[in-house]
Length: 474
Image (cartoon, rainbow, N blue to C red; front, side, top):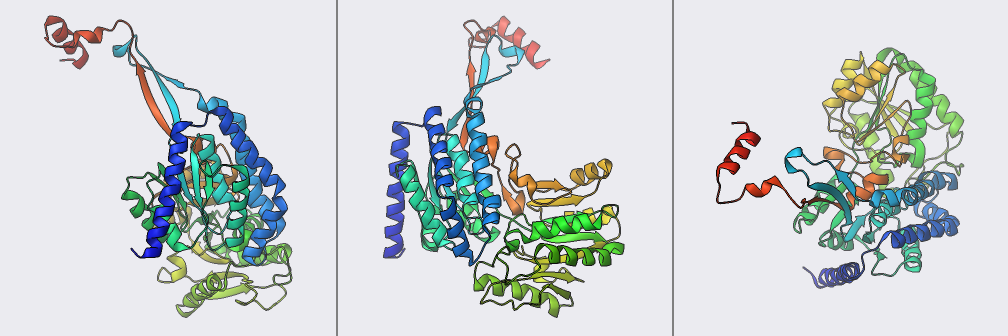
């Protein structure tokens, strides 16, 4: 380990030990937890305009309405939901006791874990940083947050906000480059939550494994949208386009490809064109259209499209005003890909941008088989009004979460768990599931004053043998 990395590791360990010591001295009770959440709510409202400006600066342009809809509202909703339910969440829960153990009693107690680490990504730098933090604080933990270095303005704003709100032994934001992130992941947290790519997720999990630190991984993958032949193509196109173009497709649950009936291809193309023209009549000269985060990300997307083109895909670029779109202005138009095949990079990795392959199918069985033949996605979208077919798709496919007849909105439900499965992640949070993830669910058995189980002690006599024959059934 180089000297600089050693210094980083020492500083991070000292911060962790300071939080751990403070937690052991005074674990937050309900009043302290609620106060921490209320202060965060007030700070978000106070710094609303600062957050909008910081994120827009990091992206090179993102509409305020998108930040309010996709960042601030979800976090505020999580805070308010937690405040409304915290008392009930914290109460011990009675558990039934098998009759053989009567008159004993049992209960489940939720206790804070200690110090929780959160590593957040750049695409939703506030929502995916503070959203998990809400669950960790509600559960009574102390928190260390490492935001992405790729959204530095927002990272430093969050650091400033948190410094105003909390003592560093309670909550700390630690900005820095990749070497800081690596040192952060190697800390012996009581729980570590990472949101980002599968490639980095493997490294985080490996580092956490050295300390036996439990992890929640929120990754991504290729989330499919399946359109049934009976569903309105116009309605499906409008919803898929909106789900894809929120944040210019830089969303882990954005529709990654569309499975559509073969006979509906031309109609869907027409409706997608119409939807884009209506939502974004201009791209470059439009404050409503989010920019790609960096020239590097732009070139990556362009490379995916070019690779698909070379391998036989038909490329349709939807640029209603025919504006100049390039790495300099970081405006990337919605690009449809037809005649895609599995050997194309765009069908092998998460796209994370406004590129949308269209995959035709003959019948719903073929569409389901196509989804099931690939790694399990973070999200799945199905468009159909038949309850029977909806149940069939839900039962025969596996995904982290599902929205039926729309896109993305399952993520905003505080009463639904959010999380992936397999290559798209492990574990979940949001609402009570976040509280539970960041708590130790401790089982407690309270023995009665008098119990027949006392007879099952040496020296074993006739009563013990009679009881055992009765219990075992032999």
